[in-house]
Each structure stands twice: as C-alpha cells, then as structure tokens.
Image (cartoon, one colour):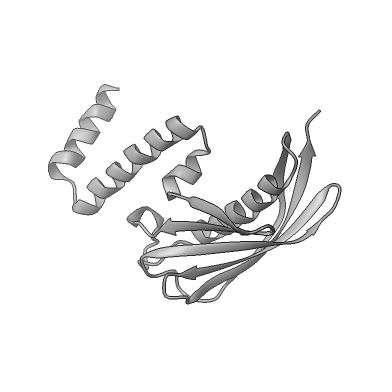
Length: 160
C-alpha cells in the first residue's frame, strides 16, 4: 500500500490534468460500485440506463479520457462492451427474477469514430427463446451520428 500511496501522491502532485481526471473517475466508480453492488465495468464507464419501451433499453455514457484510444476516439473494445452491456441488461431485466444471461455471440459493425460528449446505446429484443435471446443495438453520439451497430446472442441461465 505504501507504493500505491506514493504513486497516487506523485500523480496528484505532478500528474497531467487527464491523469487527475482518470483518478477522479476511478474513485467515483469505486464509490458507486460499493453503493450499488454492480459490476465494476458498469461504474467505470458511468452507465445510466432505462427502458424506452417494453422491448427497448437504453444506456447513456459520457465519453471520458478512460475510453479513448491513441487516435483520441472511443476505443473499439469500449464500444463493443457498451453494446454487450446494453443488450445483456435489456435481456436480463426482461426475464423473470432469478435468471441470468451470458453472451454467447457478439457482432459489432463500426460505422464512424466514437467522438462527442456521450454515447447513447439503444438495444431492442429481436427474439426470446427458452435458452437463447437475440438482440440488436445501435450506438450514437449526442448529435445522432451512428457510431456502431451490433447484434448479440445471449444464453439464459436458469437458477433453481
């Protein structure tokens, strides 16, 4: 812990504004994770979601330095994670209590660079079977520019 404390103090004293912002985002994510008990990735991304219709779920995430690649656009893996989280959350929340889902297949088409202030990810349920569900997802920025389109297949875990 002493080494960690020294490194944190070094960043707070001599770090860039971006490094300090990443630390602030990390602390806020850890606090939200502790309060909500949700997955770390949800809190590190700052996901906020709601149903738009019975079969449509939307997650909104601010674009932060944590998400950027070396080209200063949202990293493709973050975009894929956002699509996966949106579709998975839609399906889990639409199932009876006590069921979980895991991703069986994910396909992402990257259409435009992830730029802007936030990403809006909207998933729609296409099919729900006994063991598998299929959903589609569109990710846009705040101006409505389409960033990515995805489809996913999710396996339902029935807990007894």
